[in-house]
Length: 188
Length: 158
Image (cartoon, rainbow over all chains, first blue to last red; front, side, top):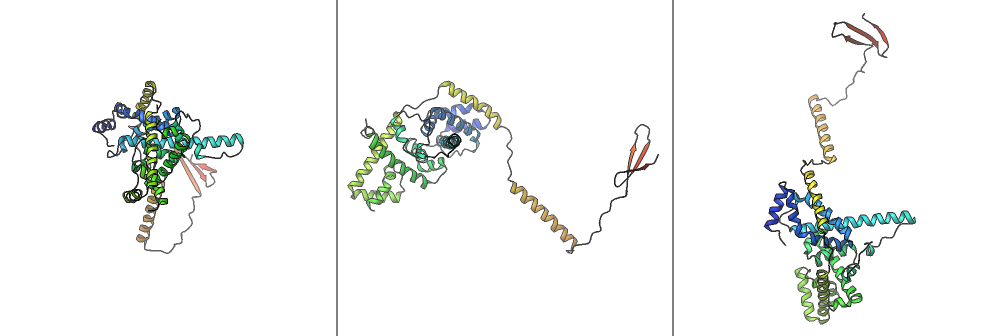
């Protein structure tokens, strides 16, 4: 997905000091960005904070944006990074809290890294079987339909690493659908 | 290609994410292997279902108030970004420049001098008596105090 002319013009306006052009530039992505953040964090409030931070970061680094890239994918990259950082931070804080309260180090389980989850749908339950990395890759590649290269760029890893995680994620998702959500498999 | 190897690649093949060479190899295998062909069909169906579920799922949207509040936060950020950017230079770069400068200075001195032998330097001896002169700007009166090297008063010129 390439950048359109309107986006280019709006970016130039923002870079020339007209901050008001930022809102029409990012408004088309407000829904998709929130959906991405929600699927990565499983929590609406957290997703709102992720998108807020991501848009502020995007505004500050707009001068470094490569216009040959898709603006949407660039925003997704920033949001995915922000969500990942936030989840790591939260996991560390939780581990430190558990250690302080119980006096023993909390065992970190990547499968259950998303606490305070709002599991409202079968889709979210399916995603819950994935590790954080598999989840990032699966959401970006299969749900947001970034290609392998863009997914690797967004997650700051190699295409090979994306393929390895994607393969594992699809295997787990298929297994989860077969075992727990057969109605999804049957299209109901 | 064996079924075992094909099964490892099927999840990626189902989403068209294999490199062309491997994709050709898997395609050749499934043409001759109905079991692997069936498995690919199942993966594709699972992917299609989950993508459809994602599209149908109602994802929480922004309220207008939340969105406006966020955009209001971006405006002050605009004035911050207009400040001139000062590039932080790494410390090792500054240390290297200083080192190079000192090295050059020492080298220049050695070349100028042409004498590499250490020279004996006579010890520096301080003055035995220090004088302190005070002059009145109004009357031109001068007072000179004499102090020894321990800053003990030795007298004045008045």
